[in-house]
Amino acid sequence: MKKILPSEITPYSTYLNRRKFVKTASAFSIATSLSLSAKALHNNDSSKYISKLDENDELNTYEEITTYNNFYEFGMGKSDPSNNSSLFNPKPWTIKIEGLVEKPLEINLEDLLKKIQIEDRIYRLRCVEAWSMVIPWQGFPLSELIKIASPLSSAKYIQFVTIFRPEEMPGQKRRLLPWPYVEGLRMDEAMNPLTILSTGLYGHDLLNQNGAPLRLVVPWKYGFKSIKSIETIRFVEKQPSATWSMVAPNEYGFYSNVNNTVDHPRWSQATERRIGEFMRRPTLMFNGYEEEVAHLYKDMDLQTYY
Ligand SMILES: Nc1nc2c(c(=O)[nH]1)N[C@H]1C(S)=C(S)[C@@H](COP(=O)(O)O)O[C@H]1N2
Ligand SMILES: [Mo]
Image 1 (cartoon, helix red, strand yellow):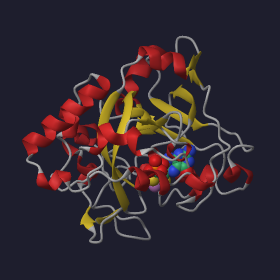
Image 2: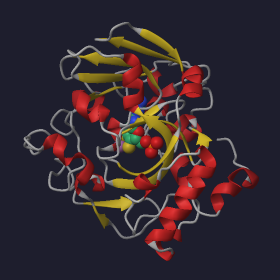
Image 3: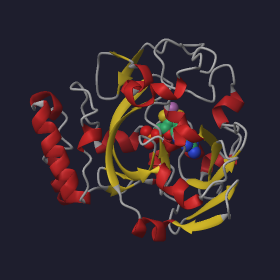
Image 4: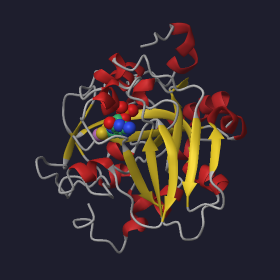
């Protein structure tokens, strides 16, 4: 793992890296100091998202976020992704846009990032295994890329595909999962302003273990929906297949919204372990983003569509 020099994180250390700070500052000063710092970094107002953090939420450290990972392409253990990903080279990167679009596209990521505004989003990430973190991402709304892609009106879902490079991703040489990893969203979920494609965290480009150079972040869904190192974005008419729901359909559904009332067949989803904390905390409906996303599911039985 690349070592971060103290000098590199100085601009963040005054606010982002202080685990205790959310508890000690008032709501107003949090919003103000965070949005000012975010502005200084990216010239962008992210205060409305930052204010969505609960007063009990503290940012996880850069160390925690980059050494405790799930990324089976590099192995099944939590430290495998940070230990086994040094051969992976995410630069340069081409994103393929295909399926139900006016014209299939190949986009060079470096070119795209020159045109797109990068924003800060601090989100809770809740893994289906019942641990969670709070992560300060940088990225852009998926809706921006959908606009560029110009999908046809027949496109109702999007499928995402992780790159397949067994020479650089040792886990792909073993049959840990069917490769490549795939995931999907319904179009309205994909267009929701909370849904982002992330390019960085804590102001640094994504490290390989976090899904460099581009990964999805869907904060109201279990972490496995947030697919990493995306190569292909495919617009489709029917609900696409997704890796974990193919492997164990009775345990992992297509929707996989964080839901404290629908347990996993083998464990409760009512509480979670926040990495860095001792006491378990209650899991929030839609991971705390109910106000923003509950309307997407108002006519659905979430027990059936888990
Ligand atoms: N391609 C790919 N994407 C993936 C995974 C994976 O194994 N392969 N794991 C998922 C799971 S289970 C979780 S919880 C999150 C973890 O993201 P993080 O390691 O950045 O915290 O990535 C998700 N994205
Ligand atoms: Mo996960």
